[in-house]
Image 1 (spheres, each protein chain N blue to C red):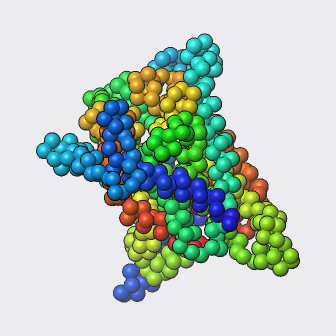
Image 2 (image 1 turned 45 degrees about the horizontal axis):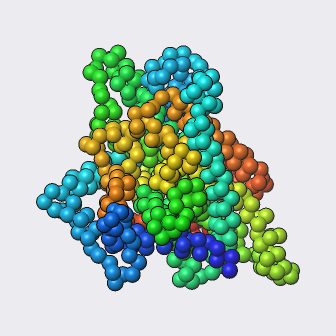
Image 3 (image 1 turned 180 degrees about the horizontal axis):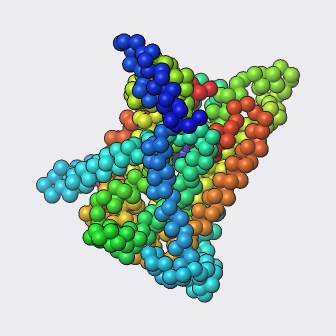
Length: 312
Length: 286
C-alpha cells in the first residue's frame, strides 16, 4: 500500500471521531525517519573517524593528518620504525597479549568459584563481598589504580611495579565479569538441576563438575571473552603500574608517545593491531556463544550481541 | 567454601589496598629520602596531608578549587550531551529498528571493541591544524581552529566520544525491556506518539537513564588522559590530572592519596546507588 493510500484511509476514519476524544492525526505507526537519520548521523560520527585512523596507519609518510599514499611501511617495510622491526613496539604488543592471557586464566576460575559459592549463601559476609566485587564496575579506575599503585609500592613492595602487579590488579578489576555473568546464569538455571543431582546421589563436587559447569559453560565462555578484550583496552591501571618498556602494553605506549609529541602513523598501526585483535576475539566470542547456547530458549542474535558486549 | 579464594583475593587486593591508601594519606614523609611512609596504626595518624590538600582547595593560594569546578562542568556538559545524543539513538534501535536491529546493534557496540586510545588517536588525526576538519572548514570559508591547543570544547567532545557507548548500551538494554503492549495501550487510549513517549516510555526509562548516567559520569571524574591527549595544556586539567601528577611527584604522594580518598568519599553514595540498582534489576530479570 502506498503512503498516500494510507493517509487517505486515516483521513477517511476521521469523521468517525467523537467529540471529546482526540485521535492522533497521523498514522501513529509510521516509520520515524528523523530518528533514523539522527541514529545514522551518530553512527557516522562514531565510526568514520576510526576508519580514517586505520587508514592513516597505511600512510606512506610521517603525517597523521595528510594522506601521502598507501604503504605497509609502519607495519613491515620500514627497517627501523615499523612494528615488525622496532623492538619497543614488539614488546608493547607482546605485553598486551601476555596481560590479557594471564588475567583471563586467573580471573575466570576465581570469579566462577566466587559466584558458585556466593549464589546460595545468604549472609552479611557474602553480601558485603558481592558489593565490593560489584564496585569495580563503577569506581573510577583512577581511584582503584591509585590504591593498587600504593599497595604495590609500600605494603606489598616485595611485588613492586611491573607485570606481576599489573596482572594482580587487572584480575581484581575484572573478576566481576565472570562473577556477575555466572551469577545471572545461575539465577536463570534455578536450583532444580543441582537438587536433582543431589537426589540422584551426586556429591557436591560431582554436582558442580558434572551438572553445573556444563550448564554454565556459555556464561564462562562469554566472560572469558569479555575479560580478555577488556584487558586489551585497559589503560589506567597499567599506566600507573608499568615502569619500563618491557612491561608497557600498547595502550600505554600509544598514550605516552602521542602525549610526548612523538605521534606518527606507527601509533595508528599499533592501534589498528589492537582493534584487529579485539575484533577477532569479539567475532570468535559471538559465534562461540551462539554455538554453545544453540537450541536454548530465549537466545537471539541481539541477546548474544549484548551479552558479548557486557550488557547483561 | 567455593567462594573462599575469591573472598580472600578481594580482601587482600581490594580492601587492604584502600586501607593502605588511607595509611599513606594519614602517614608522613621520610625526610631523608622523600618517600611516603604508611602508618597502619590509626593511633599514629597525622593530618598533615589532609591539611595540605585542604589548603590547596580552600587556602589563600588555592589552585585546586578552580580545577574542581572545571572538572564538574566538563563532566556535566559531556554527560548532558551524551544523554542528548545517546537516548534518541538507543530509543530508535530498541523500538524501531525492526529486522535491522542486529545490524544497528553491531554498529552501536563496535566502539566497545576499539581501544580508547585508538578512538582518541582518530580525533587527534582529524583535529590537527592541517587535519580534515580544518580542511572542511577551509572549503566552506570558515576560519580554521587550533583544536588541539587547549580548547575546552575539544576536551568535552573527547569525553562525549569516549564514554557515550557505555551509556547507549545501558539505555538500549533498558528501553528494549519495555513491554511493547504498554505502548500500544497508550496509543489505544488515544495518546499521540509524542504523548505516549512522554507519559509511558520516558517514565519507564528513568532507571536506565540513572544507571547509564552514573556509568558515564563516574569514570569521567577520574579521567586524566582524554584532556592530556586532546589538549595537554594546564588550562584544561581536571581533578584526575592532579591525582596522577601528585602520584608521580616525590613528596606529594600522600596528598595524592588524600585527594583520591576525598574523591572516593564524594562518590560513595552514587556508587552504592548504582550497585544496588543493578543488583535489583538482576534479581528482577531472574
